[in-house]
Length: 209
Image (tube, rainbow, N blue to C red; front, side):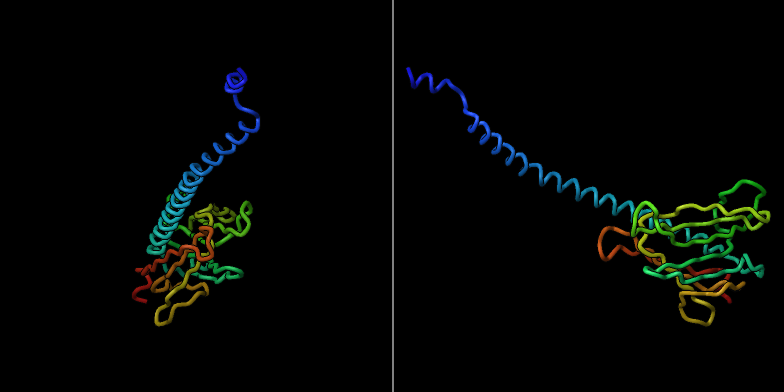
């Protein structure tokens, strides 16, 4: 009779705790690889998005640079300033017929664009590639449109190839368009060696200069 009662009494609290612990260990061992797979997939997707955004940015910049003009007016001159402090940073400004309009008003085939890096106020250590754009026919006092072109930028570097010269990280404002521009973008991917994207653009207005 005693043996029968003992077999029907069920599990003790200790036995239940041991069983739950074993079950938890099994669940963790099964979930960990799954979680790792998700994190790996998320990192891969983020890298693809960053790569796509960087390539599109360089493509649009190439289109604009291909339409760069040689103008005598001071504000329309081509200029490149090396703003490097703790990371490679260039400020590039030029007038172009290749920029998409961002303001309404009288049609103006020439736009003045300026690219530069700015610290991201929401993400310490990360930079934003900024763009300012203004129609060349804009009335005095009109402010350029300022927009964020690309986030998570580690560096933005431009070099110019003047006629008869060597590649240089700086070019004083000049009405002469350089023969070519070389651009390098580094995107922050969480590693010490971020992915870099490069392109070289030959400028039609400067090729014969």
